[in-house]
Length: 320
Image 1 (cartoon, rainbow, N blue to C red):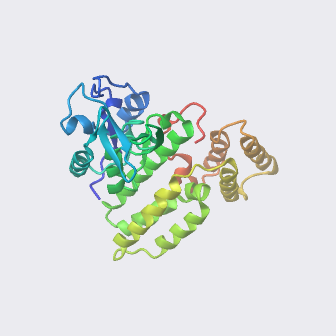
Image 2 (tube, rainbow, N blue to C red):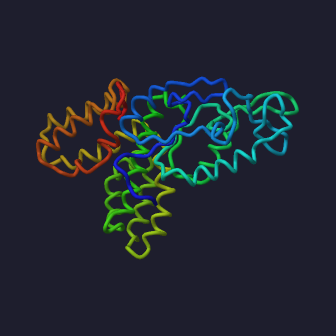
């Protein structure tokens, strides 16, 4: 693990950051990259096609299925595969990048696309959406626990918030390794993510708890490796209203000796309004926070469930 920095480190396809590197020399001014990423993250841009030596403008490349293998080829010269060159470049480039906490890839790109990239059949000419860009594939192979998204999917509010949750979780995880007592920092990390994990995957929370219960300064390296894969997998889940309400009921238990009947009834009513999707989760959470502040109960202050990432990154109508 590399040394923790002041901000999460994000990789971004260069064309999304207004770099004119697309095959025709154009670029995309992506609002998420321009506004949120530039303010809250350190951005590391990569255009694998240009950086491996391809020109601007350049021939269009594509993923092509030859039956037993999918190759990266020039669309007008499909017999000329550049898969090996792209793979070698990618492996070398990834060694040069700092430890990243997330990556925003260009949708549909044969080099950078990370989900459902078009693949053309060499036999039939038909296209299917089952591919992954060569650079993106090498990235996920080297960093399987680092959150990835494409700019298209980030237009979905739920997916964007989930991505931000995971980016900040990975960033906080990296800070453990520079702590004076990493095993204690490990236990504190798990404790602060308790409510988020309960909402996302309660079974995984219990399994992760068993790993944490065994950690010490001597076995920290192995236990942390066992932990992070399951943790990031659990974090990728978007909880339902019902799962959130289960967590809110758990939180309510900490207030049972402090609320009168009317206050408890008000909270339960807001839980049901949230279940019916008439308000977002922020409404009952703010009311819960009010009571914790009023009664000076510090438990909630350390829980990332109420603030998984900076409030400024929350969208209007946010479910966080």
